[in-house]
Image: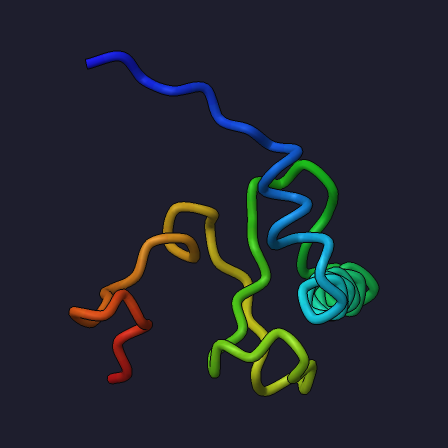
Length: 86
């Protein structure tokens, strides 16, 4: 089976360039900046800022935590690929 090359331009045009996704990305960046100021993360540390409720716009301190990239990017999913709630 031949693997098809990924078209990053198409991905950006179809998903990442939408205003809702730009706002979500800005909110995630603001969350990381907030934890940088508290010296919980730093550039190149291999850590992700985890939003406990899954909402990138909720930047309250109680909702944010630091996790490794592997822990933050893999989580149990439901049959419909949503995040499984505990």
